[in-house]
Length: 440
Ligand code: HSE
Image (cartoon, rainbow, N blue to C red; front, side, top):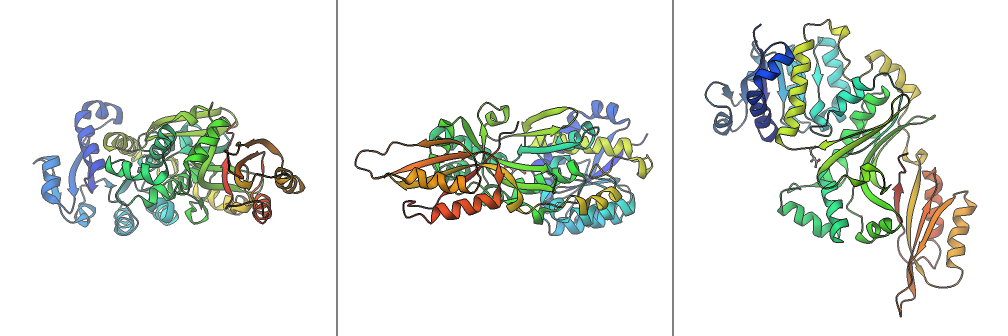
């Protein structure tokens, strides 16, 4: 059978990885897919560099629309990124009847509903394994491997840049700003790291996992997004003393009222495997009713790890594109009509309705009755304390840090407690609140 023809839009890090792995493993991939898969056309603004990557046998153009317009191309791989021109090109490729593979989490988390609806109408596939956790096949696991289960929650370290920074802060006892500069110098963090350090990249990814896990539309606009920029080295130290590590988690959880969808730094028990995921690595934990808890670990970025996910999608499409569109694996795991039906029953909850536990650090005057007042406020609101740590005040100091770990309570009640504690004259600085996830 004639090889399936692939057109790449953009041939940077992931695109060249895709080209190289596909060429290196072409025979094995052909035997798995049932026919050859060939990149025959590439669009990139830098045509000379692109041609140098792919060699003479592949047509290189400067205009992405020339790839979409080529009737010989079966699958368009979008590796441009962002939601400007990439959105337009993906919609045009779908309209032209092409299947699409993309690594673009931002695009799908924000415009996924429009893109999947267009693909459904045209009977083409949009595959996006590479959009979440790079080389880890987590989309496949959630959508297919765990299809027998009712999924309860998903929690992941899904941003390598921030995990690298947190690992360095813990190992070296350094503050965020210092480690960020070092990470940029070493090339671990981008020159503009905003999306990574503010939690936006992780929120894009957990939005996609949430949709697949629970059969709801992609709703990035409803996600609670908090990054790591305000984390202090001392909180990492205190957490350690209490048996926890601090990780930036993307969390989505099914509750009786709806779906929690949130990204924020979290204390995680140090004994959990996921707490020991260090450096730029990614890991995703899934809790489901039949299988229990499963953990997926690997490289969340990089040329060939991400290419591994892109090519897995190319193989899937090659295997499935002759199947009746209604019989294919649905884009978001659930059939579109089921997603629509779920929308009302499973709303994404506002952060005030999220239930979790907390780490609080209070800078307090070291005098009689302070602890009683603070714990009195917490008790009056029905919040149960799990542990308290009070650092001995250094000699000559008349203030100290008071650390409180709580059991689960609803976030709105914790907001009340923090406001009341903050108003005490003996609380001397803004209270630090970090959420805590036991993940059991
Ligand atoms: N910037 C991301 C990270 C990789 O640091 O994990 C691409 O999503």
